[in-house]
Length: 543
Image (cartoon, rainbow, N blue to C red):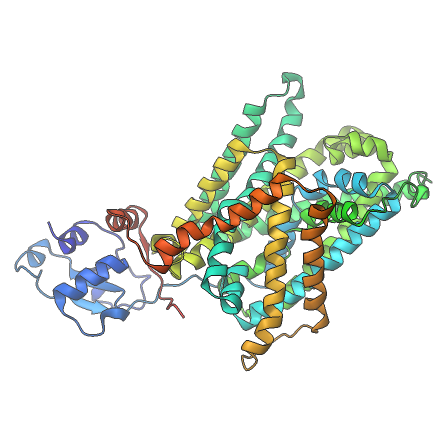
């Protein structure tokens, strides 16, 4: 059985009245199928059509007798059908995507890490504010890049434009196998920690926590695979609830301040750390809590009017989070001493038990909702890096396909969730945070430097938003410091492993990307995946 007959026997997408781009009579007389690159090439050779590079779909008569009446299946009509992601995210949804991804587990897990590294209350608060400023400056740099290069994929697209395909591939290699997936794993594991607080009498069962995290990952994958609008609504709802939870905490702190609970805050800089590298580690913990400020750039192609929305959403979101985080940390210190905060496994829960009393049960519930929402946003944006790299042939092309009806990047989402599940089964929160921060800020620094490079190599490209040149220079220096300082202070073999892990990507780049080595049977597998998931290549053309 040849390829065309296989496609004729399998229904991928049947046009209905919703397919307004088709003539009315075609709704009843034709069935519409969409071709992968392999199938398009087969159709090119069999039908001998001219300029078949733009062919993306074909119509076959719905009557099987007509299809089998001749060796060529009778009359085959080739037509172009534009397939792309939908722009469903407005300003509010964009702000919620950033805030909802930033406010997740970090503010509930990392406060003790910041305080432990800084050694004093006052310095810890300065670090929290400083981390917010760094996140804001980073968002401004990314706003210029995103409005100039309006493609999804975030750092991948910018590194490719500035340094070439090898650097972009190495970022994808690290992002897919470590950065984005470990971030998702950390969030779901943290959610499981808080769910476990409701069953503390049953003991501490690590397997049960990992099963909860796995369930959360799978749920997030289903939501994002089904509909972009549904994922955005989940993000908006969970963001509203998590911001409400932080407002409850900071209002409680203000009440405590009026009651004179300031003994912990009055200690000021007592015991402050003086080592620059130790303070850098404190920034690692704080910046982990702020991570997500860059996430809107991963989904630029799904944002309405990105030239205006990107810079505005980045500024509003980061300023909001900085205010919430600073006041939340002040509130924590009105209810517990520094020692108690460092000893607490769930800081927010301890605060709720002391301030809200019986009503404190709402805090772990809000934390669970918060981390789930952050996981949802991370999966939403993380899968787009895979999607963008795959359509540039830096990953298997099938990972760039989108569902023919829902227009969601289903294969890349499933791939992202699968890697995250392996992370959940293998890792713990503290080790993942350290590894994630080191590699992430290496990629951030290269991206900030790419903005400086593109100012000269793409000087004539329109920039709807342009950040002052001093900001990307400063952010590049900050990134270098955050990468080098911990290595100088405490050299560890893990840093060498991280470097070797990044370079290991070249083992796959040269044979599979540079020299286009084909794996036997993979093209057939791609076709079966396309038919099984009902996904289609996009209309995107590689630059």
